[in-house]
Length: 252
Image (cartoon, rainbow, N blue to C red; front, side, top):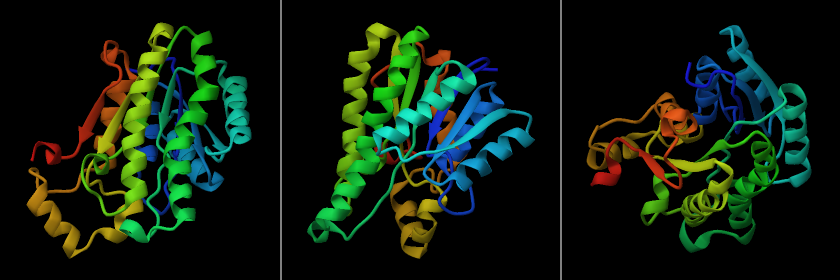
């Protein structure tokens, strides 16, 4: 098992709608690989659903409700994890939303909400998780960016925040290397998750046919395997990097 005896936190471990999201798939995979998993989500029921799947498969997990944009919630979450498991080895920051009208029609409120959810949440979770990793002699952090960070996306705050995820990943990687903490991120392309299910119509399918060399949506499980690699000792000399899980989109 690649994560045997590790304790992992997945922030955004639930799915906003029925189905399998990136966080849910990663939490389940972490557990299959031997990790004890803290399933954290804004919605307790969503976190509990993921934790129950893990338990039914013979894994170990707890569900914790928390708003990753609020320091008090994150601090409490970290306390609960360390009380239950005694340490933290892995953190997957998966919280993310797309919100608001396209282009300059975006409202100030929507801009602030997306930036807070997608970017500030990473800063806050790291602020409280990193000290626990330092106590344990190191760790691995993986952040979820997006291919939207690399091109002129119609949703300005989403693309900008995801570009910020890549930037803060590099900053954290350099700053935390002396503590043996590696920080990387994944950048998913067109992934078939509940969050984007409403966008999967003829127009989206046509875009995939034209833009994605592998000619299909990716699966959340395929994102999860990339996260697993970065979180595992197999990636022990990799930090500050972004892996594009995009079916070849970035090669076009």
